[in-house]
Image (cartoon, rainbow, N blue to C red; front, top):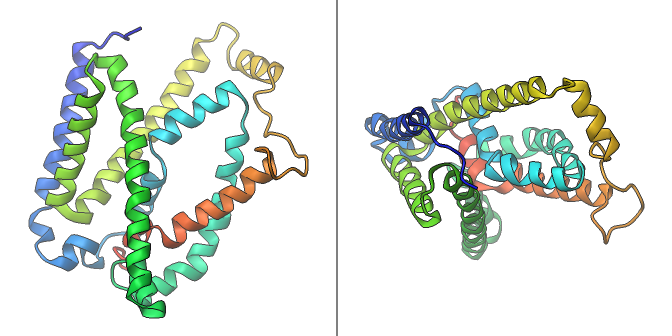
Length: 264
């Protein structure tokens, strides 16, 4: 069933999309050297880079797939998010100082320094293949939502979104990407908060009714705590979260490149 997509909605979507494109054009002059294009000459404020890292971590998977999974089962995916502070502390204590002193742009530079060119090539190819799979999933989830809103075909939505993002990235470099992330994160967080308030206020029994229904259907459960590493128990999710988030904050080029853009 297609949701109504009013003229105001279309204008908001159009203005937002054009604004992102213009952002890339605006930062074009500032990205006229390799260093400026790749790491913004290390001149960006830490708070902006921090929001950009949050925007890198959050995607349509976070906003669509995880809530859908929680709705169908429970909050076991929340355990994954609880491992974020652990990975962030390890990264800030060990990985970030290492990269800030040993490499200029890429985590894979350090692999080459330690093990040779083969390690850098292997790491780079692995990252690119993984990124292709992740980007494909993210774009597909975005197309699912916009298809219901606009009626456009999935291919059209994926093509327009992919071309637009690629355009402002290639034109404006990492600085355009980071400041675009800042705006997107603010919009995402504001939208999430407003949506929660509207949904809770719209319930006949108020927020208490939501909590009662969720508790009655065991939606607040964090999963099984049995010592089982085969099924997706809480322990499995925790271990997976620690390993995956250490990979994200420790070696993922999306994060490492952003570490290099800050002043300190």
